[in-house]
Image (cartoon, rainbow, N blue to C red; front, side, top):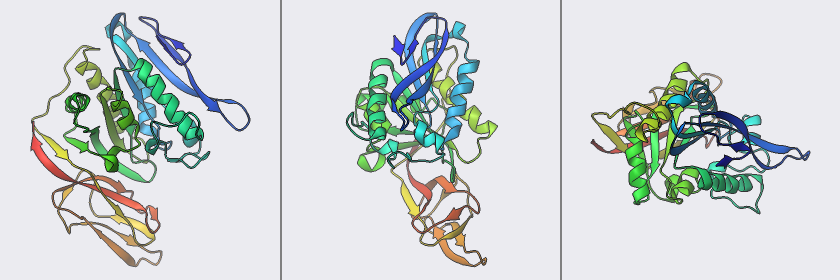
Length: 324
């Protein structure tokens, strides 16, 4: 098996590139790829980060996990792609400076489209040829924080059931069971699921990458590999899981500085205060409240982060069920 320029050799770690397109000066976009193969056959776990270029925690954690992984105890193959979206990463931006596209809204891509569409298309082809299971790493980016939770695309298929089974083994109590175009339309998750490959999105952190964020991302890789018997050990099984539905997205009406009055991971009821917007004279110009009962706060803007009218400031997810 080859992944980009990397020939997979049992018992070895290899580094190489996946080339997708060229920059304006004609130089190739070379996407770094890290491959570790065990001495014994087994599944291939594909893990990628920075589909959104300013979500750095996943990238760093993939690199660190690759460095620490012992191939002597590995069955199968680990494929890590720290940064998928190089133009977005270099620009420190969620979207691409080349074509203004949000990469995670345009899968499965188009081989004849603009760069981001071509990137989406080529990425799906490589995953199709190599992966047995996929982890998709995200965070709140520069402007927001998210707790550690996981997302599956529940399209009611056998692959969705396998994805849910994996999600329950990654150490998070909260699972976002997303349905339909409003939740996962155009995402890499939905397109990989269409290939009948179990896929889980892992969300964690935002802003500065802390040691805790890094450890949580790395544990999700470890637990996934244990779930597929690629490395020794058993993944955790929690006493209870909170299943949340499609999110309510709360946008600001006024510009100013955001002052949060709750934390990510809190569970609020309708009317509970999420925060406020303060103008540069110190006056509160808007108060923001939770839109629904029993809602998990899955994303929140940073304290005193500058906002503009119409900016996404929080995501709240009603808890649908509790159970094992």
